[in-house]
Image (cartoon, rainbow, N blue to C red; front, side, top):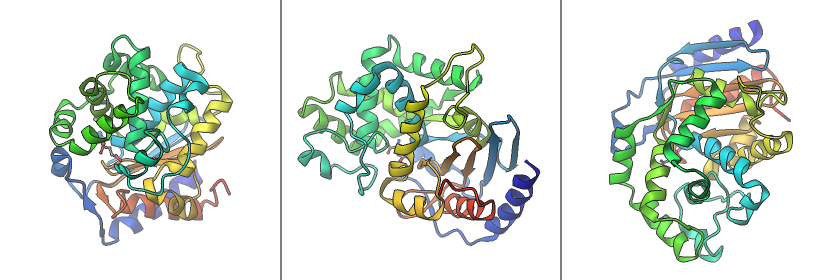
Length: 305
Ligand code: GLU
């Protein structure tokens, strides 16, 4: 940890000084109120050590990072049949695109673009009695963190301005790949996106994808080794919308971003690291987050390649 600690501190002070050319997301009105200067980093290792700098303890809207958690629960409950509803190919298109859905007959390219995550919510809807409560309880259990919660204001704000997602869901339903009521599925999706966590909490909750031997407090495995490998593979190839290739090229780790400015990245068998800086580049990924992680894997020589 000492080695990581010094490197993180050095890179943090370098990247803090960099002129941020990104922009805070404002298409979800509530997100526009976030202070752009927030900047936090936290690492958690499989030896149960942790270290953070800056605003690493402040909760923020994790947005699409939550898609890893909804995918995890759906994969656990549905098994391999899940892939009949959603594919595992990079889309090479923006996160909210409708373009490929028509030629792909309503089967989203992957579970990390909006269309794919909405189908995953629909799958969960068939398994869970009380979807919002049950999903939150699942997150609390795997993180051993009872403080996790949705941000109702953010969920409502996204719902009020969610024209794209409403269009996507109706379009997919026209192909028969949404089985439940569109408004119910979207309400669930918006809540999942509104989950709030700090960098520290994020780097802890994803240890189940980092450590092959991870079990919850009750001794339960979250996923099989094969399932965890597959989710890491989808993160590597699809975790950054149409910038997934660029992230693999510059950082070299499975990861996932969200329009709240967070990024998680996983080094299997070593660590999970999270960065939060709200200003996004033109592809919707945190500008300083990507920069920080590129420097981090370079200086620690710890990418998966
Ligand atoms: N809730 C956001 C949306 O559906 C998530 C986007 C993201 O973080 O990529 O647009």
